[in-house]
Amino acid sequence: MLNVVELTKSFGSGSNKLHVLNGIEMGIERGELVALMGPSGCGKSTLLNIIGGLMPADSGDINLDDRSYGLKNPSSVVDVRRSLVGWIFQDFHLLDHLSALDNVAMALEISGVPSKEADKRARDALEKVNLGDRMDHIPDQLSGGQQQRVAIARAIAGNRPLLLADEPTGNLDIASGAEVLQLFKDLCHDKENPISILMVTHDPDLASKADRMLLMRDGLVAASDIRSAWGLDGEGEEE
Ligand SMILES: Nc1ncnc2c1ncn2[C@@H]1O[C@H](COP(=O)(O)OP(=O)(O)OP(=O)(O)O)[C@@H](O)[C@H]1O
Ligand SMILES: [Mg+2]
Image (tube, rainbow, N blue to C red; front, side, top):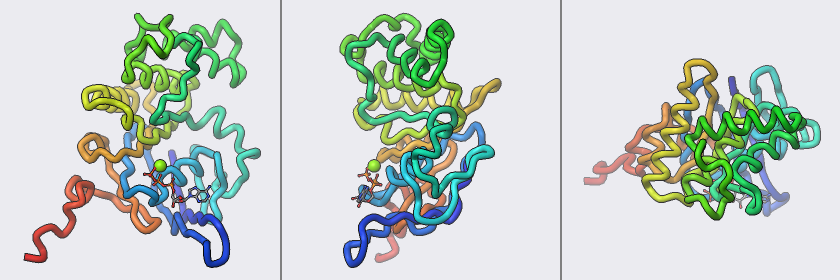
């Protein structure tokens, strides 16, 4: 459902030019949870931003369902952001003064869903992330894990086929992080309406629980296993 083809991106110009993505090739099937790992500054967020339609690449292509937009400016991929790609961030990005229900419903209303329908879909999404009994709480009255689940409800309420999660468990304790990962798996492996999730994480333990791991290095991505994710590649060779 997602195909990234020969994607390149650099920042700056002249001698200050920084080549971040050097021909990324990757894909995700419907129903797959894929973990993306790699050292700080290697370009993981840049890749997500391009897939999410927030910035254009320099060359290459992105195919998502039947849309192709790798080089398009953000202003001409409104439909990608509105109906194809949902976001989940490390710091939740919830509105402090709105209840869980209103945080989710408002996002739907902004994308054009009538209030009554938005309310119903928000309730359904919050039930799905097991927050049926916390809908009227504001973020301050929720734990970090619960706040992240509100953000996940907001991301899935729009029925978008692809979620991009940039270090979604970075601010959570181990137990809440594991819960978020299990929720991601349930959403991807749903029998009726499976979605796909691309998740950036620095936690090899969580990454190993995804369907597949990718490792980004030198502007390229490669399939990874748990040993290389832990940085154990080539261990013992010097002996
Ligand atoms: N808008 C920009 N202008 C200039 N340089 C940028 C811009 N965005 C990112 N960079 C640079 O591109 C490189 C990749 O950044 P990116 O945020 O994608 O890394 P990352 O893999 O997400 O890192 P982290 O794990 O720390 O979040 C970094 O060296 C960063 O400084
Ligand atoms: Mg990043």
